[in-house]
Image 1 (tube, chains in turn orange, brown):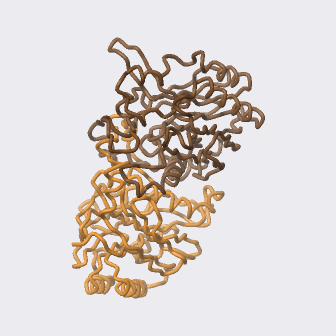
Image 2 (tube, chains in turn brown, cyan; image 1 turned 120 degrees about the vertical axis):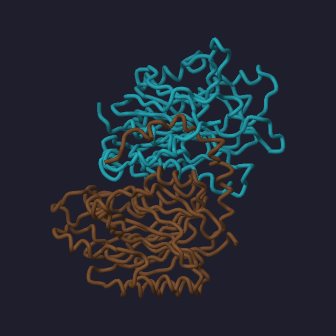
Image 3 (cartoon, helix red, strand yellow; image 1 turned 45 degrees about the vertical axis):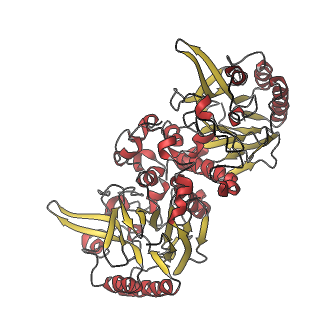
Length: 307
Length: 307
């Protein structure tokens, strides 16, 4: 299989609370069709791509919350996406809210998967770095209740053989943490799919609102460069539920260079040709981990446990 | 002590092999005088600031190599620098090659120190991430023999109380490794001094020569942002011993923004006002380590040992 192909972010514009999954999937199908015409082989949809970004609201009633989760993937709503991608020979990344019934009760994760061009799920990841807060904070114009609505991911930072290379997933806030990127890099990752929903306004430090796009690209570019991997970042963007989300979906080279960047905050295909063999330029040289890392000096990085 | 003051990189242009330490210190004194006039309180000189970047040559004879090392700091050559900085009330960072006589013989480190405005050494660090190679590689136009000429640092990644804040040091290649920045960040660092000697030409991957300045700033900006710390990067720059070194000395804010950047590859003061209290904007929010890091997931980062 050639390791040189076209990869793309499938940025989605806003999804309102009243929008049906069917209407969202119809928009995704239009992007798959654009991707097919542009010979895309890998297409990255955003985090929580099937609904509005619901952690911005505090829900009293569990039934209200449940409406945003998937009990199985694929399901009837997303089956047309799986079918269209398979028909086009396109592998894709999809983020969604996952609800599992376990012996201990309902468990909720912020989850993403890689689906091979043959329609099989090749990798599943559950978000480790849940941002935001657990309790209702009504003093702010919107909430960021990921710590309330999701359990921390329990699958580690896995990678999979995918499209002739090693692929991994990070989700939104994970991308800001070099530890997360490095856990993938140490497994030889060459292609990282990252979906995100990032508000332009950060209520706790509004003086940084102007920097949201810069911080997004800085994190993605540093993670790509410092691990010698391609990164595809896909935003859900635009004014959604009264909250403006940044765009900036992009394809980043293992040199950290931006190969393609979104020009809108709407539905948009952001495509670039990539060549997984170019990862070696970085991995074999400046970031040759075996020659140059000094793990015995990094003990502080693993002290303690997260909240 | 006010935590708001002017900090600066004291970029040095090239130092040739025949240049005496006295001539280098004379250039440093001119920069101290400029800094005094601009009310600078903290001044960062480059890595190995007292001599040419000698690891570019393979030396057969130990005496030739020894000529580039300091047996004590301060010594007669650098005493005028210590005196002038103290008289001006300026704290500074100085990188130098350190030769220690131990029971086991001579040990060589790539070392840097922070010197308080009262002339006392407040912090000493020995470079952990030694780049380059151990053996002579005559097929290349110049060498990068840091792995041959230095022993890996044995002081960890220390921080010190300095100028009213927490300060640390990284040296050159350390800045590319997020692990090194994080070891300082986890100790609450607010100000990181980083000297570097970075060739424009990278013989193992010359297709990246055009990216050296970008990679320098990407690493410094990501390290600053992801740890909520000011970073002062100071280059030795320009055509030195037949090898062009990048400049780009800079002051980086805890937001990752470049507050000041060198305009030349010569001796140049690169100054900006900083306010250590602004580190909290990042440290208390997006990079609140206690709330958001997940160390139990990072086990891979400390597996193995360096070469």
